[in-house]
Length: 297
Image (cartoon, rainbow, N blue to C red; front, side):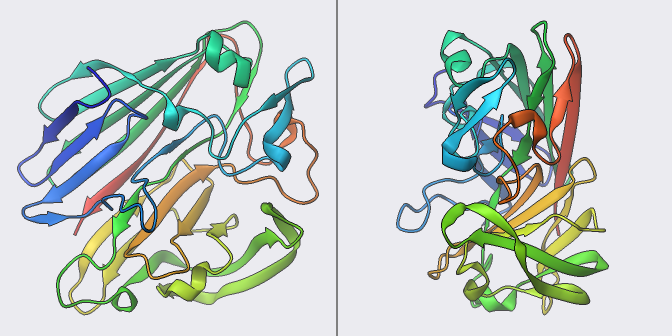
């Protein structure tokens, strides 16, 4: 499959499309409604990139790995720029695979097999990630999804009509970018975004300083809906420790809901990949699996 070809999977309620380039989703349709952001470059040309082998940014886009080699790994990692191979496909599911290569080892010095699958059942889409260490040394990595959804979803609505409702009341005290180095997170200057509350009302002013990084959530499920209609979607992300909610500060008509294991380097962290908070480690021959689901409401 070339990177320009589209793989389409369907249930009785959803039609989902993806491409080999970055194994990225390009459409989630329920009837005539498109839920996935369509990548308008005026705001953001992406749609649903995968974050691997890092989530967010490293200090100076670099880190020491393994035997002390300094490697340059740009924001969210390189997988989103690679062309994957389809290894399985049927009416309701498709699996993409990326294997390490001499080119990837110049960036990230580990042997791996990374499989990304999409599966639809009724009104639910499951994102599944499997990361296998095919080398002979322990492999540190981070993994995350970055799907962005149209906001508003239906005609006659506004961005501010929508809320994110967490399954539990949250005391969300968030890290924001460091003033002197905006790609890093300043853990000394946290700000309260939710005070024993479940409801985050969407407004572009929330994103004046980039995304909202929820690193202390109790919830592992949320809904993104217009409360007046109940229409929207539900996100379940039990396999992920963190969540990022992001849009642009200018009025872009989308919101990204991003389950991550990992986040950008904190101001107090060193530059050794294995030392970062929430690092995942696969031993030689070990495969680790993660998934999250999007349910259309």
